[in-house]
Length: 358
Image: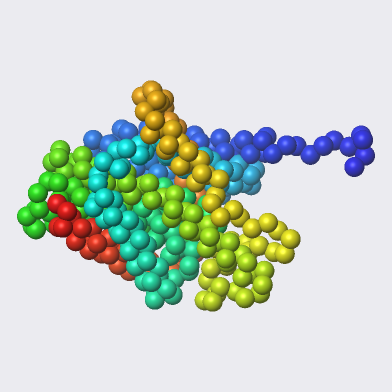
């Protein structure tokens, strides 16, 4: 390049328009979710954010100038939000549940994930969609879908479909779980265990547990936070899977069923494979340990919780902007069958555990 040639503009100015628009829409969704919370507690800002992005993408053109910032919001901003999620967990609170409940949490996450993968393969659904549904339904809803998306490098249509399924089936559990607890005669502790172990989103757990009673609500939220803790090993496992898929692609072996490599660009010879444990998972665990010291002031925790919601909502807008509903519609009713079957698996494992431990 000649010494007189003007250098290309940096990445930050090119990213600013798209990232700024995503952040503004996310702020609006946060405000709307807060305003309607008394009447619709399960209507999370993450759901509103991805709906806003999908609506824009499919109803009006998205200016090309926004593309760099939208891509930035869909990946680095998303990962930063996952890191901040670690400050919402305190390890002593989780350990206080006792070994029996902790074993139930591990069983629910592991068996629900396995059931989703088996059912997705039986339905011949794309592997990226199956893994996102497995992560979201077994761990913590939309945040787990977003974290898995960052590791698996899934198509945006897959992320949007998985989040939609989490919202649909998780919201249906708000009236269903209290009704099932009442019909089976469970006490508040056992009902709280079942709700926290089986319901997908934290907001949905709060809504369902609150219907049963204060005792059930406290147990349900603590159990749910224990499931959130499982986000780290689940994402680490997906990172291992991604490395294997990339290695097989380099070797020319494929993935066995022809679907895994649709999730993203495969590695090519000479290109470094992704780390076994993604950096944002390390950050998530580190902040969880910081929170567990008890030294973080409440004001900082509140600010971090708000910032985490903003970052994840910004990323949801960006993911929504990449979704073509025509591509989603081509999958037909099979994703609904996957969501229903995975929810049934979580209910069965959680209910069995609650009956034994409650």
